Amino acid sequence: MTYPVERQRLDVFSRFLQPAGIEPGNVRQAELTAIILLLVTTLKGVAVLPDWVLKESMSHNRFTTRPLGKAGMHGTLHAAVRRNERDAAFIQGFIALGKRAMDDD
Image 1 (tube, helix red, strand yellow):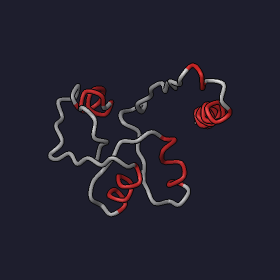
Image 2 (cartoon, helix red, strand yellow):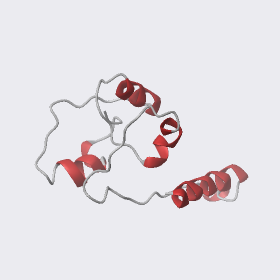
Image 3 (cartoon, rainbow, N blue to C red):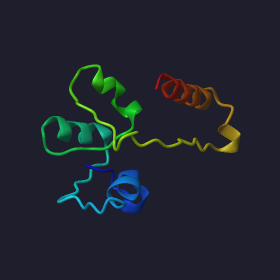
Image 4 (cartoon, rainbow, N blue to C red):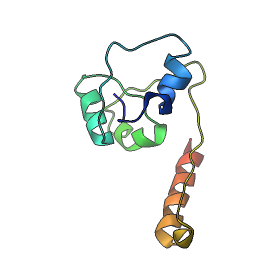
């Protein structure tokens, strides 16, 4: 299960499957994380998602997770905001939430 974006923008393909010469038998796309998780819980496929996406779902023991490769796959998240909104409370709150989520790992 993937989001509907170009394959080269999906780390699971560019950093994991393609270098290993692996091509999935079928790739299904969904726009919403909730739909991807629903399809996974109903055994309709697998998905590669960041840990922070799964934290709430994992608290309900609905998923089994495994790292990709021996050390897992790690990346950096960036926040892009409009200059005139960068000091807005909701933007600062969102960035703080992201930092806390990263610190919890």
